[in-house]
Amino acid sequence: MTFRLAAYAVCIEDGRVLVSRYVSPLTGASNWTFPGGRVEQSEDPFDAVIREVAEETGCDAVVERLLGVDSRVIPASEANAGVEHQNVGIFYQVRITGGELRPEPDGDIAESVWTPIPDVAGLQRSSLVDVGLALAQTRPPTGNVPPVPTGGLIQH
Image (cartoon, rainbow, N blue to C red):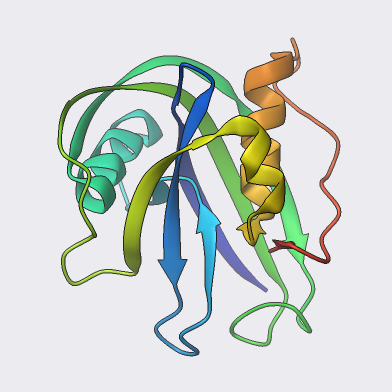
């Protein structure tokens, strides 16, 4: 089994959420996700989410609060590497403070856009988008929401 610790930014303003279009370097397939990604060795997830927002979107951000943590195991049949994979995602409520949206230079994020929250349901997206929105909208005291089923427009 492979393992990844990641930090994700949930940026909501005026009924819109910031989402980023990830394009797989292996297949060219794309889906929408949140700005964020791998926490590097010795890096604090709090710092990682700010770094990832800057790298992927071109924007400066500040963390406003921790929303929660999601841990999911992706079966080998659905994982990119063909082996079972566990992703632990730390979700933060983040506010954009400056910069201009742009594609990630030499990266996998083709674009980032502000999308009305109701329109997210019609996007081909990562399950982590639904997890992050559920955390932001319900703010559970445990910092945990039920697993999001995949299929249709929702992928791992």
